[in-house]
Image (tube, rainbow, N blue to C red):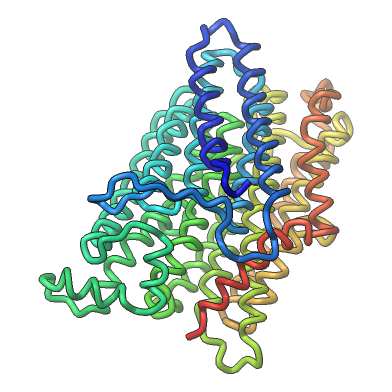
Length: 518
């Protein structure tokens, strides 16, 4: 399969679906839904086929495609995946059909809605497979456009300011990212991530920046740090890291349920993917030099977002801040491995544990957070638009299946042993603690606050006396139960047998760790 352009086909399959669906007449709602879901399931099937043909024991890129595109600009059409890329493709292929099923009730301009979702999936797949900055950036930006319109056209009462804020923040980050890479290109003449990673590891990138851009009157280390911050800002807004997070709560809260699932389930992983694919290999020296302030940012992101989630009364805002909190653990693991670990007997083992946890947490959070927003959508539709924690109470008496299934997703988010969230968070803390004891110890406070606000959801929404107003609250239908069961089943499977995914990317992690010898 390595000689077959499978990644190109995978990238443009949803694009073809988007074109087919978007131009259907508005009245063709049923056809639009079915056709869009069919294309997304085709992407899932092709991704599973990729997984079946993937050599999990090899750390090198697989299914590579490389063609000269614009030679004068050093632009090549270069695609390929390793364990990280395959993991993100699998996450995208799972969450997109989930988001479509959660959006099945949409009536207004349904063909356009589902077409935009497929356009968004094209951007996601392109981001996770492109290895040349030029066309990687095209896909990075492509994902922004449909997300903006999905919020702007189908969102809640405050959708206009939420969509505008989302667009401005992410566009500002993209400008900083673009300027940083243009500086790198002017200095090196290269856009390819693999070439730049090699230059970053052997130190020639810094010297090239000094030679070509020395007119700035900065030292080579200062100049490299300035460019590093430009790239960092572009990725930090996408994750997001506090204080670049203020666009997220409004966007997640006002977006329609399916779009919120895509934003938290996959789009937030684009920033983390950029940290692992670009920032860590291309700027290892700068990451190490800035390690302590970056660890502080990770700790602040974890604790303050958990505290903000606890302070909210709108369920979607609680889940939005919870999403920031869980991604903060990924940042903790990434920044912790940039330490030398000189006092440890075998620091490489701890770094491998932390990065394995980061990879697994990216997938687990995407699955769990998307499911929680799906359940929030069920609650909102049945509640006539209400979704406040104080609006309900005692629902387990009239909707035991709904409360039980949502409880599984909540406990998975909490990190309960036996569910998927526990394994990834355990690996991050296991690896990060000996590498940065102070940061990991402080970050553990976030776990406690997370437990408090998740138990508060269970208490306020599901338990207590039943309000007579909700005595006719309907439980999940058979169709809804069947729709959510695969995601919940996967949470259970990964909680018991995480090796299902760890075996996919462990070789990639070990290869990354081998380059982190300071």
